[in-house]
Image (tube, rainbow, N blue to C red; front, side):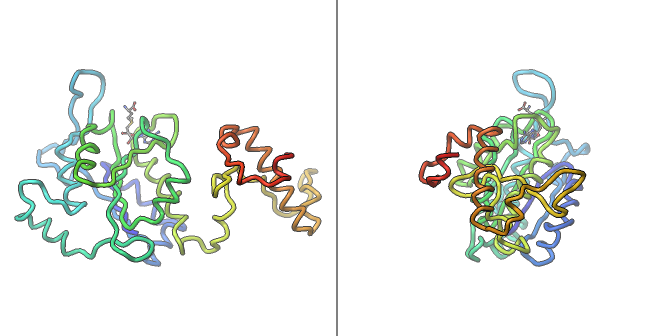
Length: 271
Ligand code: SAM
């Protein structure tokens, strides 16, 4: 998967060279490039923002700078110079990004935005099959709203996502969160693929996961539930399922309400 990230702080993404994300890059599963938006500015101050039209506090990211950058990274070329631009020519010489099945894939352009729909495990699962993701990190009061509108009108798959009901200083952390959620679902990313099968928010009847324990069986007077030591896999599965249902009901009743009845077995209904 090819991943381009545009930010005024591209250094933020050096952490993606660590741990599993770093290993995935070494294996050639991911190709991540963080770009500095200021490289597409032309003024001496490399400014990317301007005052809000209509007044108000703060600054808004300018559409012209973003458009020069995104046109190039999407291989579109500026509208008036599509034929003549040497950069566009170079872009067309790059091999196209491919999806999880190895076929050429259209890019998905993603803007983190606190006033957008919530990013969920379902979105992460869908995007884990993409061939090319291009993230645009907002700063200040955000980016000019015409930027996503324009690229949607060009036929690009544009998504805006919030990662939660709070406001961050910039999109960098939000992009890191989304990238972790997306890439760990890619085939070949996790050493043990089973570790992503039974997790919170995963699958048809998505629940919160049961509680987890390791050895020793008694630690500082606190015991692991006896059933987990019984060796009876049927009973262990039932115990974990009941716990997942009860915890979800307590902590996230909205997930219980959203459950499809077909995802419940007879014993679940008793719980
Ligand atoms: N004025 C905006 C508002 O009230 O909705 C907040 C802008 S925020 C300070 C700057 C940037 O941080 C946003 O453009 C977005 O890219 C990112 N951001 C902040 N909070 C976010 C969240 N909860 N989810 C996703 N992105 C967020």
